[in-house]
Length: 284
Image 1 (cartoon, rainbow, N blue to C red):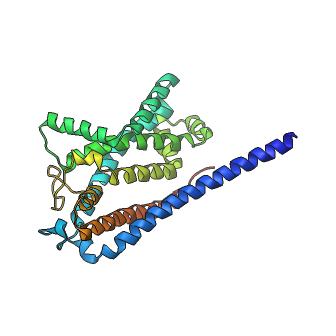
Image 2: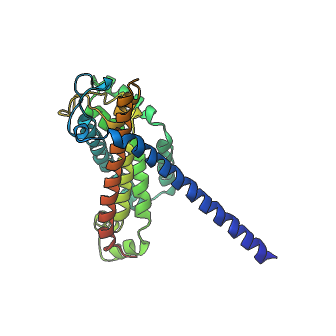
């Protein structure tokens, strides 16, 4: 009787897992097929090599090169800034924090920050800009996105470092290494594939966010040339193009979404290739 119940329970959860996987994959395929079906016909060479011309949002000539470069600058700068802030926190949690209550409190704070809506980060960044006497700019967008990515990147690095076998740390101490040497030469090297994954997740979150840069980065049809000037982004380009009543411009919005998807896909493939190489040096 117990074996029968165990088999029924195992079968139920197996069906549940398969069903969940099918639902997730179906949603992903539906999103991709919609973006490709509606965006591919409007995608051309001029769209990715030109900035918007006069009347672009009324269906005339031009492209979204400004938004492509702007998104890369925003997400790239924010990811670098968030990485610089996140790495010391992750190392501290595993090698320097002696009291578990502090560690638990920091992790709880990061989890709460992870769940804060991005519009709140945008409003907070806008307040900081006003306090500093700045206007919407590339720097403002980078700061807002860095705050948005900080808990994501920190928790990702935290989990990656936690996967490193504790015996490696003890062996490093036994050989006379300091905590900092153990962190930089042992822990980070072993956690490199996981750290790369965390960076990719944070970058993808940053490049696809619109609410946090709406108030802080602004929007412009010009290319990003200064940290203190407004900059365009692909999510806002999609929003503004979908807001127009011109059908041709709405199709360009789906093409913009397709470009954004392709950027994330390319980065995922590149990161997987590098992660595969880094895994060769990981001790299991």
